[in-house]
Image 1 (cartoon, rainbow over the protein chains, first blue to last red):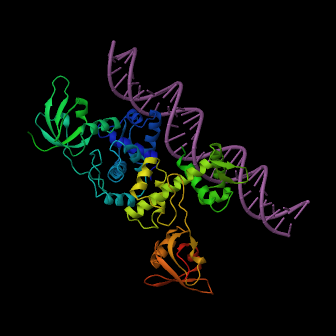
Image 2: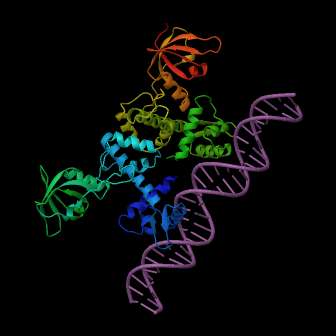
Image 3: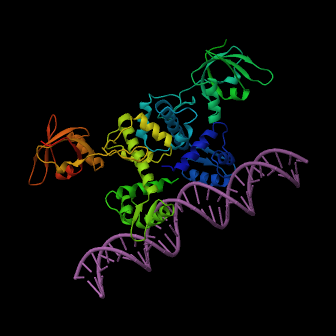
Length: 220
Length: 220
DNA sequence: TTTTATTTTTAGGTAAATCTAAAAATTATT
DNA sequence: AATAATTTTTAGATTTACCTAAAAATAAAA
């Protein structure tokens, strides 16, 4: 059984490991808003518990057990987000902090039943995949909006930025999950992208385009 | 803002204060499965924060702020219990421990929306009243089943014992919330009570009868 | 390949919530 | 009222998760 804090470390390491193989102390510290010295302390503890592999000065990797624990927390977090949006009518930019607390509630039964109550959702309100109770993710075929060419069509299925500012911005533009889009133009000058929606045309910066995930439904 | 632990102390003191005016250190310790010395430490802290009034060796009472905080936790606990039973199909004897964790999630918005989602329930699955967001309880007129006379009718509206064993026992007998009952006999010998339900007749011990609350709908 | 910069760790300390054991106050009993 | 029993508090430690400041290791630059 892990403490609330240990769980948060595992989750952070898990997310950072999606980008780099060996996760660095400073990266963890920054992510968790704490100091590198504190991270070192905790890493040692997690290593003693067999949740991470750790070589001094070389960063950490999750062990099998550590990874499974982390995935379980991610599962809880995302299921609660679905609950908050689908059942309690929260906006997609309002759910993160509360889910951050709810993810630590320790009851397997609770999560199984919540999953069922929500209809076994495959993705959270930001399009992030929800692992099943065995920790398996449904394979998904995403492409970044920025990589599409003029004329390409697709459906918005995820975002890689969860800040409230970003999500509110998308909401205002009408770029929400499930929306069908087509690239109508890409500006050479600043790389901004012109997008055709069913009812209107919007322009987004290159920076925004980087963080939108599209499930492509064919060229042209 | 209180810690998880502080909240548990306030809640315990609140419940104990329903029976005695001045709550004793030992009583708190027993209830919280901790040692009296630890309780004294925490009481001092709560007194410093203005949440309890404390005179050495004389026990504690909640201040207005402390009481409101406690009621808020009770509200959260009971709303989550309703959620677990009504939405996730937990049994009434399975919800306490999980609600014990959920009650500490800090988000006013969450609870308001949960309350609405559940249809502003007035009582939890054990019949305990749920305070509204201003901390006010709906007045309820309960009488203990043990106090009824032969021939009296009523509706089961609460229990004063939340142990799983007790609740499972009632469940097996068909004595669940909302059931209409009539007292058909009271045994002189051991005080056990014979109860008529719509479809059957059951016998309960005096001890069980003490912990069932009835909203009486008139004599005979 | 030194020197410099960055990253990481160690050493020593703090605050929260516990504990045990002993002392002090209160309450009950003779 | 004196003694015994109970309750409560104090004193001093422990554990967890932090911290700062300084030392050590690694990586980057001259």
